[in-house]
Image (cartoon, rainbow, N blue to C red; front, side, top):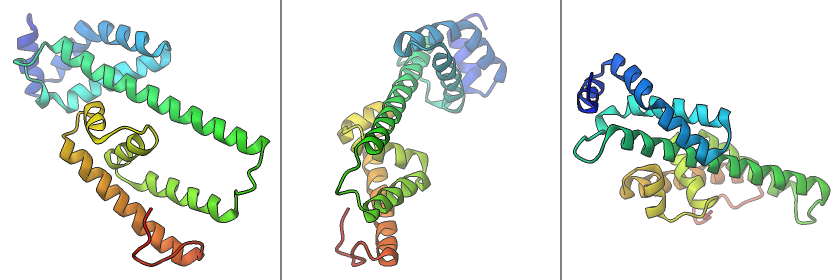
Length: 192
């Protein structure tokens, strides 16, 4: 496998040896990019591994007419690193919120509101990964649909469908739990 073109053909054909060669050839560049973006060796190694797993599972998406294999791998790595940064940011916000709640209890924090937040968090956890991710990007990171499509690499219509289905799932759960707990209206006109 002397050239990246030959390597790409073998990778797309499902040759596992080609994946190993791609890693040997381009793994250090992927790791370098991840370290520059994340500044953390352990996270960078995780992103490098996720990049090559994603390259293997999405090998049919590589088009040599659109760019080099290295460029394709670095694009995947950049998206994985951004996902890692966003995840860390959400975790930090959650930690800060919990700490703030512990130090200064909110007078508006009723048991019903706590239950509501837990129900939403639980239902988000039950959604398929792509639906949950699009909802989190839309509501927690305040991204527009086109921005979400750019970040995830999903078509715009798919992003909109994931958000619509995810919201419908949340709404159904909300209405069922609302009828159970009595803290919310169980009627069909209740919107999130």
